[in-house]
Image (spheres, rainbow, N blue to C red):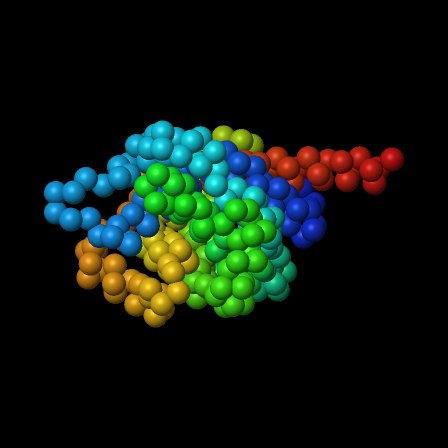
Length: 310
């Protein structure tokens, strides 16, 4: 990505990987309730399609959050947080932290990276990240989707994060932990291209035309644009991924079957279920993550520079 002051910015790949993983965890801590609300809205109507005139249990992002707090308690908003943090440390660190490295690899060290090169780098690191983090993503989605209301017959599927890994591996086999891997690769290729390339280009243009300096307002603006573009292009794949990963064995024969079933039973609007919380979550997540990433990266390099100059 575009770098700023030379004194502060000579980060190695290891620094970027560490900074990206840490920033991803910070962003998850801030935005996790929005992500949980998004998952609940996406899976609504999956097991029992709504009848005509029937009122949906979850209505809107804030209505979903209110309903969850009222019926399941505030802790339900952070169900799956541990798996989410596992995911970010192994996922964000690869897909974001290695983006610049892959871009330099494809340009053979040249600083003039075209749009195609940036898209290729984003797709590559997005796919690589899935290889590391898919089991954590499956567990996170399962925790977020489960309702915890014994009085209505809904009980917890898993008692803890470790129990979820163990139970899925035992009941569904090793493949269960990698359920939805292909749609997740597709999603993360799209998300990474939208997110990182938009941020990269927006930041570059802002600095090129001297609209802002390379500081928080610049990072905030570029991150907001990245979140909006990502939500537009990634929502349909994200809904399919969530439905398929949360499904019981045999419910869908594959990701394509899941998409076709959704289209037939719920119509095309089903692919944009949870769009508002997706945008609120992705927009806020991108802002927190990219601003944190830039600041953590600079802080680490300042300490490194001080160490090497003493």
